[in-house]
Image (cartoon, rainbow, N blue to C red; front, side, top):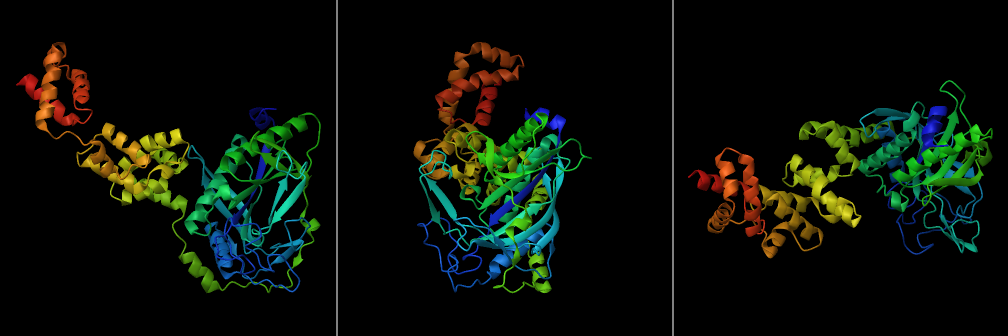
Length: 493
């Protein structure tokens, strides 16, 4: 069944569980370095591996980051909470349990307002944000898919075991209808932006810093009981989140229409096809046999410390966008285009370097974006804000026009140097030799008497027909305004 047909037939309910790796120097419960990469099993200690006699110690910075996240999501911060053991066996969990939080999370009952692409606002209810440690990483070797089925053998890297995580769990998100997939993707994107604003994580999805588990269920109407849900695990891009939700809604609707049941299970998302496949039956909380972690005392965050952290929260992305709309004079649509392109910070930095916000937006969303698309890169990977500001400065100083500036920008993006250096090296500066410009104007007038007669007759738009030859004669380096003044002076003189 197509997604559109499924939405007309059923009411979707979604839930998102987002894991964010915190950017602390060390792991959550031991002194092993918390760094991405490195040789397998090098960033470990006996505690990382759960060896006998090793004991955990809570990372204070990890607790601070968790509280900041909770505050940013308008959650209540617990006056007392504790860690628990989440028991399950899997090779990447060396202790056979994960140190997490169960019924006593650090933060609970918040909400996050998100803005969809057309400006529609949706409030996502947040059930909890709790602390835990990450598992290691299994690499399955020899199969065609990289999964355990069909593999010859598996390797386990414990570098990630014990990395600090905060898991943010929503309440069921209802009432989204055909926009369920967009809501899921936008929610995770908004969280990613908050993590970066708080400076608690690099939040790079391609490195697994942020991962989303997407829960989807269908019911016949908004008044009907909740349907059986599936959980698509570890989806790590915004596009994939949207595709996973769309596929699951269509898949579940197809099964329900055929009179089949939905199995509560975890599922895997396949990037190459946009489909999900069955993983394992989904465990409920009781199956994990949670019990309080006996090696860690309860956490009792000092209320004065919590309020100090609240007072020190930075301007969050949504607040910042509202302020910048007013400061920059952008329309809501212009700001959404900037945000959706991931160019807000670039334009802000370009403006701070001396350009007007309008000019910065024009170049970043225009020519820089066009060059970046050709190279399959993000615009900020191509040039720096200071370089775009310098380019705009050369235009404002009358040394470049837009055409020449595009040539300079392409050379800067190719690594030829700074805008002023490229302009000088390539001889792209606007022609200031009035004699050369006057000669080009005279030649164009002489070669186009019919155009001259039209201009004399009041058809001023005909000047454009003379500008082409003038620009050609000056290799595009003539100042257009100066050239038009000369044309009119000579024709009307």
